[in-house]
Image (cartoon, rainbow, N blue to C red; front, side, top):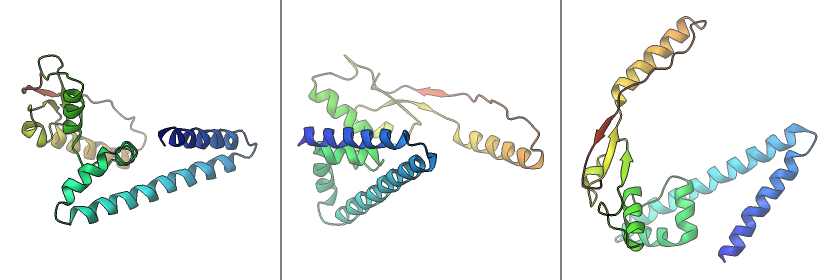
Amino acid sequence: MAQDLHEVGVRVEELLAELRSESDPTVHQRAEALVSLLVEFYGAGLERALALVAREPSGDLINRRLAQDDLLGSLFSLHGIHPVPVEDRVHEALTKAGVKVPEQCSVAGFDDVALSALSAPSLTTVRQPFEQSGRIGARALVQHIEDSAHPPQAIQLGLELIRRAST
């Protein structure tokens, strides 16, 4: 079955390449729009299915089992709705491969989400100054609205490394 799915993906890419070669650029734009809408449509359906299953007794366990299927797990990841946190998936994959964290492999995350401290082992992560970033972004937007000739600026904000047990 995996080979069949791979062939489907290859065929989709071939069809899109054929449409890109059309002399009328609107044909390609419409095809890309169609693919985008279909992906969004199927993603919404998958998300709804996960939400409905999660309401049932043992729903979280069922969703985790569904996510173990290669096809479903890939689709959940593609749509950003995987029911298993990425930290857990990385840890499970490393454990399955016989890699010990942090003895043989250091693992780090980004954004210092709350689950980082709760995962096993707790996840080293990089913390971003979200509040400061939001204030600066809002000021820049207002400034641009008031004076559209004002050139955009690149602003670097400090990041903080939060060391935990995974490194």
